[in-house]
Each structure stands twice: as structure tokens, then as C-alpha cells.
Image (cartoon, rainbow, N blue to C red):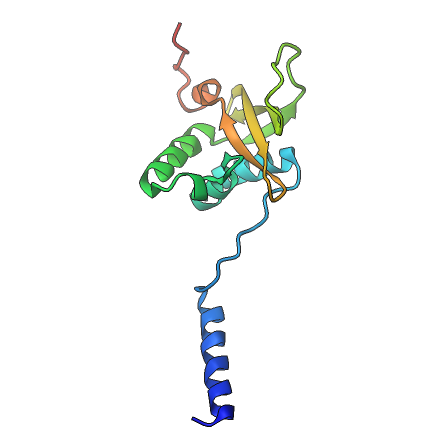
Length: 156
């Protein structure tokens, strides 16, 4: 194969790989602010975007897509979260005065979720990522349970 043909063949293969969506996967950056991480996560909840939820939920070691290798387990957890956290509206509230300070690199955000005539206050713990940005690490799902089931009451 002549050098010019070789160049064209390589260029065609690279173009095809880039256009097919396969090849090197570039991950999106984590939201720059803690509030933006919770806002993006809740938007993914309401749009039923479990894949986006997975990228916005994790630990200081990375998103759940990296930390939880078992895809079935990860998706099961996210579907439960999505079902419980589905909401009509939300707003950030001031932190309660008795709230314990989280570990370094973490923040607890208090969010009021509304579904119909039901309102709950849910703590979201966000964690800073080594590469920058924030993701949701923990959600007080027990506090959100009345959104999904109005007759639910916490165990004594």
C-alpha cells in the first residue's frame, strides 16, 4: 500500500471510530458546586436518567460507575432512589443548628422535596472529587419515604 493510501485508510478508520460513539470514553466533569451536584442528581431522578444518576452518585474514590462494579446491584440501588426521590419541586434549606459537621471534603445539604401535598426534608451528603467537582455520596432516604408512601412511618 502506498504511503498516501495508508494515510487515507488510517484517517478513515479513526473517523469511523470517532463517529460511532465507541473508542475513548470521555467522562463529563462533576458539578463544580455542592448545590449543583444535588440539583443535577434530582433532575436526573425526575427525568428517569439512571445512567446520569450513577455518574452523580458515588464516593470520594469516584462515581458509582467506577466504585460499584456490579452493574445489577448499582442499578437496583439507583432505581430505588429514583422511586423514593421522585418529586414535583425542591428547595435548599438552611442547615439545622444541631447538624453534625461532616468529615473533611464533605458537605451536608438539607433539601425540601415536594410531591403533591407531601413535603419532606432530606439530607444529602456531597463529597469533593480528587479531579475537582462534587457528587452525591449519601442520601437520607428514610426521611424521603413518605413521598412515595404517605402511610410510611419510621421504625421506633
